Length: 163
Image (tube, rainbow, N blue to C red; front, side, top):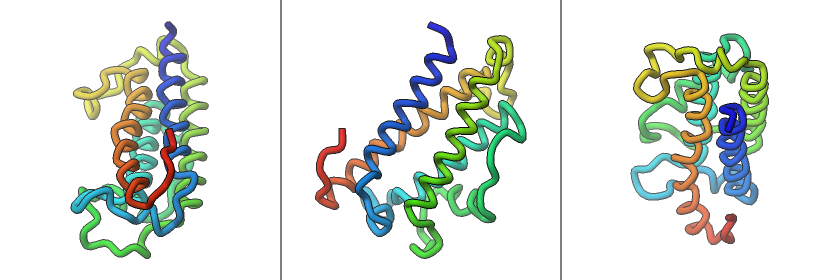
């Protein structure tokens, strides 16, 4: 199967799951920790958006929308201790930023030739993704790594099973 199809599938599955898991969560519920010591959903979504932008910009610089000032710093911490809930955004802000970045990522994917997809992603990501195709696929995989943590919040908030 062509790499664009597989990458698009990974991105699409991550998109489907993210939207299903957060659709009925409130702004306060995205600030609930899955378990003690684990980052809340607001941080995780911000972290995923930041990482997606970084990966996409590695592949095609200048093709991603800008993020609000301080966004990367707030969402790059290893944990949220020392932060205050009011430092984080409303769910609608995260979802708007996510959609804008995902639209840009999908446009990048569609714009690349097979040769460009096969090009090296560079030294920075050599351990996780040796090619541009692998780096773009890593975006979807990264979301899937985090999304399982959302289920614990959904259960503690007495939300119905989403998937």
